[in-house]
Image (tube, rainbow, N blue to C red; front, side, top):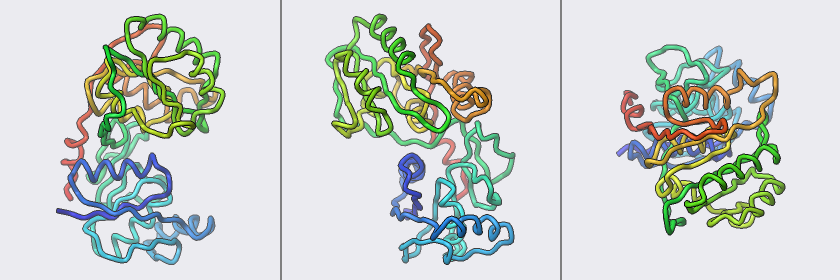
Length: 300
């Protein structure tokens, strides 16, 4: 069995993609956080990569034993991934398109919304690599639906008035269902306060109870509604279970409505039948992606 070194930039959504690949392939792994010593050194890493200079002196990392493969996700991991692969003579894998760096990795799993080039070492995928494992924290007493609410990001934001209309619609049209809801680490206090005014059948207010019931929602619910701010949450929803997936659209910056990755991501998935973007109506879409089939394409 292969043993992987996963390089983490400290962002859970990035690290989870690397972990998902390892678990899908049934590889064992260790996780080590990596970071550049300062911003200048990160800038130098792009220049060094262009000239084929690979040195561990630009970043801090404590891994000392040799692994069978090194895997990174996120801009702070790409150069260190190349350094460690060269140091040990092992395979290098990254889970997103490494913009700014030469695409000289053994394998790149790139999302379609990044419009990756056609290369033998690039496997294009419609979503982020995900691995879903229900924990049994949620068990509905009757047929159920779920609502997963994220938070603002650099491009899109949750507007309380719009979210209230969406929640009102769900509440009105699913009166015979048990309704479960969960917020996330990025959910604002204002949004959490709004959620609590509804008295849903099952509530996880993350700031008060930091657990993750989403895998159980995907397994137990007929339909899962998800706000359109997290590619990670959406990727999970189209990779596991049989639930329908409905995306609650958010307000994005006007200059980015037709080009930001969140809009392109969900529009592409809707065209391919994985989900429905809420437009005042509900359509049942429950096509699922098999990440194992993509992983097997990698010659590693």
